[in-house]
Length: 193
Image 1 (tube, rainbow, N blue to C red):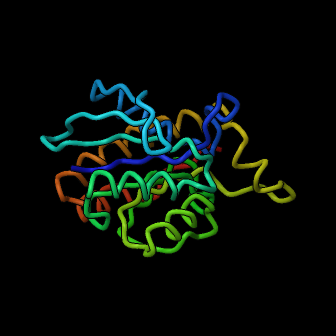
Image 2 (tube, rainbow, N blue to C red):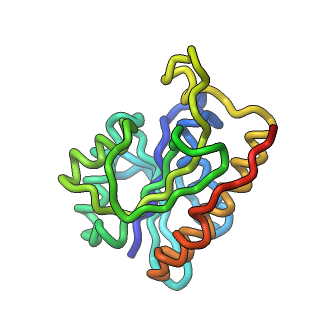
């Protein structure tokens, strides 16, 4: 069984913001797999289904980003999964260009408060992750305002494409092909001018 978690903030005002790109990927997966992600459990909205022959739990923590670890800890404990190999976390990354993916098996929080919370609650940094590039904060912008802001039209097109790529990466990861997913998807994407 795999737990696939997209990070974001609950409530409508955060829909389609940079910080909620993890939720967007879960929505794409849910749609593609015919899974309803509406059950409220473990401080998250969850849905259960099958992907590539594996049982999967899709989850969107409802704790707000900075407390994401609380929900993930509950999910991991309840479903008794091996968090180093069977937990996949999908989230926004401002150090990557818009639309770029970066798949990792471990690593620091890199200033991301949702990941800081997960590291704190798991007690280690060894879990699979897909970072979704949302672009660097422009000079003079407040970081919170930037990540809670919306994509420009051209950026949204790139992000929709990267959500589809993230979905393909998740498929490989649940087949225990994380290295292959890294080889395919950890490449630079062409930027729109």
